[in-house]
Picture 1 (cartoon, one colour):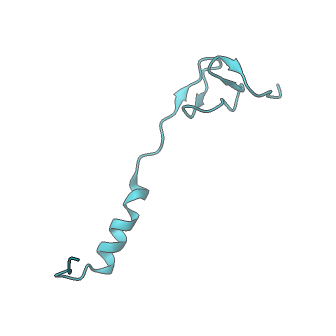
Picture 2 (cartoon, helix red, strand yellow):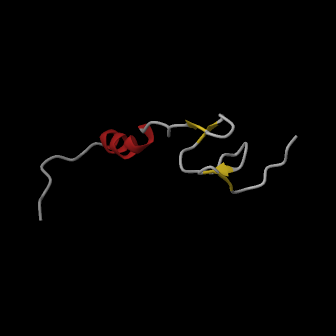
Length: 61
């Protein structure tokens, strides 16, 4: 088992622990049906289509 030579400071630990929060926001893509932005691999919230077929009914206003 390795023994540490120097103590890692609290600020360095917290910086390293919070590194995952600096990741980029997920990309948005254009829906092929209604051309609204949507998250990839998800049903479009505005038209309800996924992979060129209607998956969910959306109320028309």
